[in-house]
Image (tube, rainbow, N blue to C red; front, top):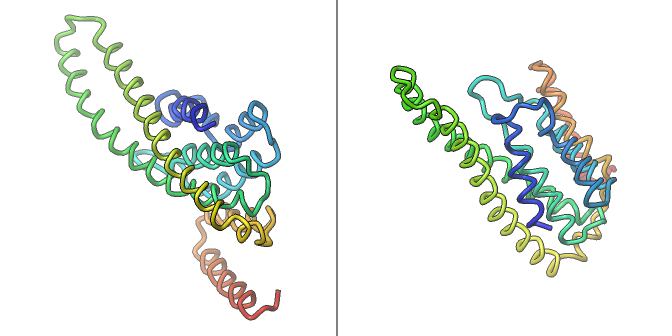
Amino acid sequence: MVRHGRFFFALFSLFRFSVSLGLIERPLVIGLFWGLFVGNLESSLFIAIFYELLWLDFIPVGTFIPPHMTAACFTALAISSYCGLDSLPLIVLPLVLGLPMAWLGAKLERTMRDRLNRSYGGVLQWVRKPLDINVPGKLLMGSLVSKILSNWLFFLVGAGVLTLFTRFALSHYGPLLASIKISWTHLLIAASVGGMLALRLRSLYVSVAAGAVVLGILRFIGIF
């Protein structure tokens, strides 16, 4: 399953910046396609909605590179499908493990963007002396190929390591994780904080933080 996932991840990752097709690289679209073609549509959509809400506040505008939601979503979906996880308490594990992939994916894109900036000199030189009409095409093709190969390798290594960690955790702590009482409602409410933060209201930030502290205290003392 991870083998199929790395191919689709490398393909869908191009939709972030290289091939602009609107919102096709969003977790909701990824979760829908994964559920339709791989199976377990309900869990796939819930995973996608979680990441969609969590990073609703981050938009790729200008030079800002947001967390790589595609990497996080594909990692959680691939691990869940590979390990055959259909219980929510167990799905929480790959859901959490997908979070660092979002950060690492953004770091990879920043590194690749810095490296590809070197091609700008080649474009300027070609503009001054356009001796070969194939130079722009070669530069573009080289950029796309390097991106898809880098993303393919990144997902192969990252998801592979996290899958091994998941299997280890399930074999040693599976019953303990399965006993956790949690529902998708809890997770989606927690992830919806990203949507509220997107409003850009400082008073809302303070209210959310205060509410989280109060709920934590109430939960700790056993009121609910």
